[in-house]
Structure formats: structure tokens, C-alpha cells
Image 1 (cartoon, one colour):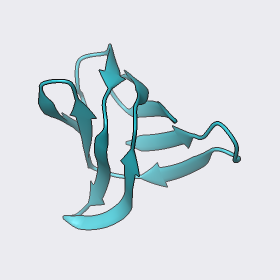
Image 2 (tube, rainbow, N blue to C red):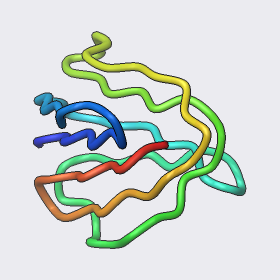
Image 3 (tube, rainbow, N blue to C red):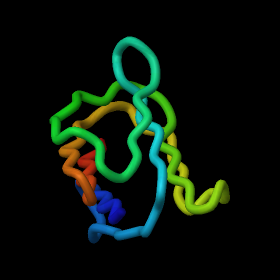
Image 4 (cartoon, rainbow, N blue to C red):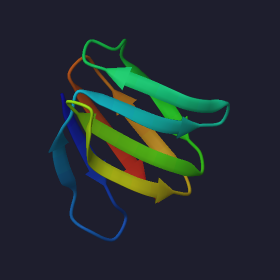
Length: 78
């Protein structure tokens, strides 16, 4: 699936991944291809994208939101 990270002060970046962990208010949210579409508010924590169990993207964030579809995730972080 395609992960697109949108930053407030930088160009967006895209990564191919097969799983994603997002920080949400009550803990972490795991996302894999075929996930039910949703929008999630992100809290302070770590975004971690993996491909074949290897890290392709990792960042500490202070919040934002994620738009999730079956094969694409758009993450807007602050």
C-alpha cells in the first residue's frame, strides 16, 4: 500500500509499505492493506511503516490525522 506523509513545512513524501502503526488517543492503531476506510485523529507518539518487517519510515509526531483506504494512507502530521 502507499503511505503519503504530508508535512506542514516540507514537500510530501511517499513510501510503499505493508503495515503501518499510528499513535491514537487510546494507544496504537495498526493498518494493513484492505483496512476498512476511516479517518483517525493522531496523538503524540511514533508513526512506524514497515515493508517485509523492515522499517521504511519512522517519526515521532505531536498529532495530526490519517485518512485510510484499502490501499492508500494519507497522514498529515504536525
